[in-house]
Length: 431
Image 1 (tube, rainbow, N blue to C red):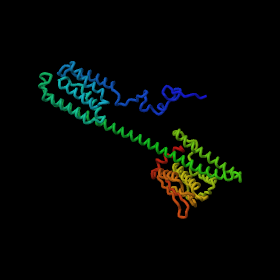
Image 2: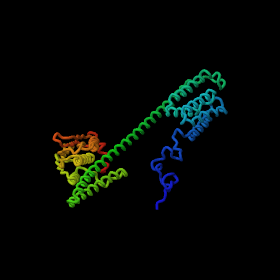
Image 3: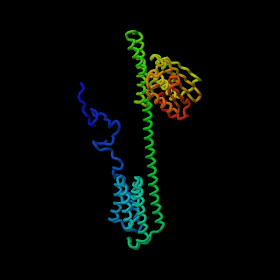
Image 4: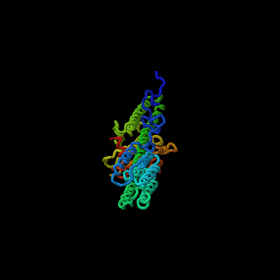
C-alpha cells in the first residue's frame, strides 16, 4: 500500500532524493533555505587583500633603506593599512576603493615617507573601478594622485617633511607618469577583454538557445508529419470498418488490420523521435525515413482508399540525409492532405532528379471536400519550413481544373543554398 510521501531532507522527494533544484542547478536561492550562491560583487576579497597588505608592508620596509625619507612610524603604517584596507570593498564599491586608496597614498607621499609598493594598492583599486565600468572615477583618482605628487615634489616640498628635502628629479616624475599611464592602459585592456568575453558568452548562449529552438521545431514537425498521416489513415479505415462491420465483416477485418499496422508504425516513429530527445548523443535504432520507403507510403495510402502512382525522372545519385528525409515528409504530408481534404481517390507523385536539384510534384484531381482545400495550414507550413531550412522552395495551391498541386525543389548538394547546416541537423537522425 502506497503511503503519503514525505519531503526528504532537502525539501524535495521522499528519502532525500534529488529535487528539481538538485537536477537543474541550485537556482537563485540555492545554497541554503533562502540564500543563493553569492555573486562576485557580494563577496569580500579577504585573501587577496591580505596578500596585498603583506606585500605592501614588507615591501615598503625593505624599500625604505637608503631613500633618505621619513622613517616608517605609526602614522605611515596606518596610512599604508588604510590604502590596503579600503580594497576590501572594491567589488561592491569600486569608486570608494580607488578614491580611498589614492587619497591614502597621496597623504603618505606628501608626508615624505619612502616610496614603495603602496602604488600596488592604488593599481588594484584602479583595476577594479575601470573593469566594473567606473572609468571616470579611476581616471580622476589617478590624475589627482599624480598631480598632487607633482605639486608636492616640485613646489610644496619646502614646507613638507623631510626637512631639507629638495625637488624630486624629473626622471622620477617621468617614471611615475609612465606608471600611471601603464596602469590605466592595462586596466582598459582588461575591461575591453572582459567585455569581449561577456559578448562571446552571450553569443554562445544565444546560439545554444537558437539551436534548442530549432531542434524543438524540427521535432514538432516530425511528430506532426508522423501523427497526421497515420491518424488520417486510421480515421478513414475506422470509418470503413464501422460501415462494413455488419454487411462485410471480412472487409472490416482488413480495415482493422490496416489500423493496427498504421498505429504500430506511428508508435515506432514517435518512439524514435522521443528517444532522440531523451538521449541526443545516442544513435537511433532505426534509420530516418527517406524516398526509399516511398513504396510503404503508397501501401499505407492504398489502405486508406487512395490509389497513388509514382513516376521517376532522371537517375538518382547520392541524396543528403536531410534532403531525403524532407522529401519523404513532404510527399507524406501531401498524400495525407489528399486523404483528409480531397474528394479524389487518386494521386500522382512525380520525382525528378535534375543534377543538383530534386523536384517533387504531388497532384490530385479534387475537388476539395471542405473550405481548407489542400490542408488546414499547419502541414503546409511544416513543408515550407522543411524546404526553406534546406535552401529549397515549395509551392502549394489549387489547379485550374479543380485539383490541388504541391511542388517542391530541394538541393542535392550540401553546402549550396544554405544546406550544410540543415543537413548536419538532420544527419543526427541517421548517424
